[in-house]
Length: 327
Ligand SMILES: NC(=O)c1ccc[n+]([C@@H]2O[C@H](COP(=O)([O-])OP(=O)(O)OC[C@H]3O[C@@H](n4cnc5c(N)ncnc54)[C@H](O)[C@@H]3O)[C@@H](O)[C@H]2O)c1
Image 1 (cartoon, rainbow, N blue to C red):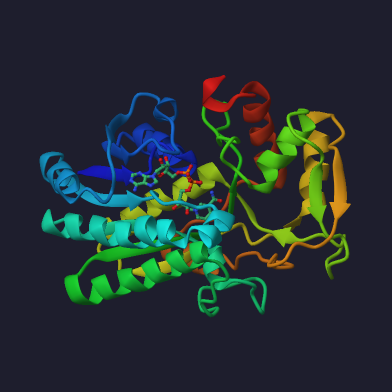
Image 2: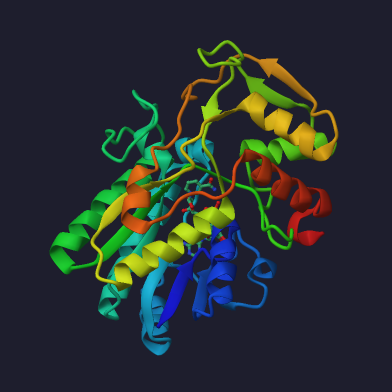
């Protein structure tokens, strides 16, 4: 009954690994460590290797009695995906096919997949539900949409059952500030705001304050990384109980603007956040946030933490780990 977590040494994966171990579930992590950190595993078992190494994955699944896989391993830099698309097709799409083939060869038929709200592109309607059209606007987003479709065909043809979790904006850190996001890698808003507040980078650039939103800045749905981890545990249980293949949004259902994030950081840190308003950035959806009704119905999951708690946990982590895991 061991769970294989690919990409488990990364940001979200390491929070799930910690949650699973706290629930006394057996876990093995498979990670190249290209973008992850062994320190984030807090002693959990790590196999350094690639999801595309079929022999390794088959052997790992067989020797460790793997019953399900949570698949985080992927590249996630949207800008890079437009400059080096082959890197993304190979790792995110072909890599997933290799992983699934190895799983099936070893008789493993349950997979939880890290998808993204970016599969919907700029939504015509908010909140976004799972029936919104797939309309990716980057190579990265397309890799997630393609894998979701591939997994549906694996359900039909090979009885592989999977849950694709479409994360909105993963953010925050563990409450005790022991693990968190590697900000040297991250281009996400909250780490950028933390860096600017701590004087580690120039002022935050706010891309446009003339959008049709209450304060004129773009709106996103920030979801605490430990709430995300909990959604994965429930997805694993859903599959173990015979649940079917499904795609689910994982968000709070509440939209927060860029200025909301800046104000929350000022409240939590007691410091002024340096920022400057610049022009709109091409390709930024004005507003996107989840309709979380389906995940509540299917998994009984609901977010427990709001923006202030997310920002407070991020502040505790970043302000005590100015150099990430090298601090
Ligand atoms: N962070 C977000 O806001 C967000 C939002 C939506 C979806 N996602 C998805 O969630 C997953 C995890 O995201 P994260 O923020 O933790 O990213 P991350 O970069 O911190 O973690 C990814 C991990 O996968 C490993 N990895 C990459 N390719 C691999 C391979 N071929 N074999 C083995 N290991 C490999 C990396 O070394 C890294 O440790 C990704 O699939 C990402 O696309 C993230």
